[in-house]
Length: 291
Image (cartoon, rainbow, N blue to C red):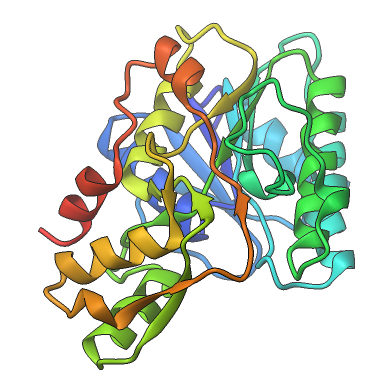
C-alpha cells in the first residue's frame, strides 16, 4: 500500500474509532494504528508501539499518508510516564520518521486541559498554562501541552486541534463512560451536585470527527492551532440539567455546587470563521445523542 489519504494514529480509541469509521464512510482511503485492541472496520490496520521507532517507520513507509491525525492518548488518570511516552515522545518519534522531502499534514488532537481554567474561555492564541493545574489531570495536561509544542516546532505542516469534553456514542452505539454515568445516576434518582460557576464547552464526537475530516483534506490550507469544540460555553450545573430534561429525568436532582469558580471552555469563534463544518451548541448535541 502506498500514498493513502489518511493515517489515524490511535484509531481504536473512542474518537479514533469513530474517525476511522467516518473516513471509510466518506470514501477516504484510510489506515489506522492500534496498540493492543484492533477494531472491526474495513481499513488497513497496524499494531504500533509508539515507543518503537522502527515499527513507526515501517508503518509510514508502507502507507505513505498525505495526512496523519494523532489521536493516541492515555486515559487522563494514567501515570505520568505513560502520558509522556504517548503525548510527547510518541509525537517526537513519529515526526522523526516522516519524509521531509514529501511532507504530509500532521494533525495533533489536543485538549482544553492544557489550560488551568483561571481565565477562560480560551482562544487559539492563548498560551497554555498546565503547570497551574494541581488536580488529577496535571500530567495529562502538561504532556499534551508539550506535545502541541513539539509538533508545532518540528513540523511546519502541523495543525493542533484542541477539543473539549467529548460526548456521544462509540462505534458500538454505547455512550461515552462519563455521560453514561450521569445518565444512569439521573435515571436512578441520584442527586448530583454540579459546579454552577465552572464552565466547559461540551463537544459531540460526531461533530468533532466531521471537523477533523474537513481539516485533514488537501484543500484545507490553514496551519496552526484550531479549537474544534462545541460552540456553547455552559456550566457543569446547566449541562447536567439539560441532560436530565433530554432523558426525561427530574432536573431538580441536579443541585448547585458553589465551592469553586473556573472556566475551561474553548472559544471557537475564530475556528468557525474558517471552517465549513458547523460547530454545534449543546441542545443540538443532546438532540443528536438522544434522538
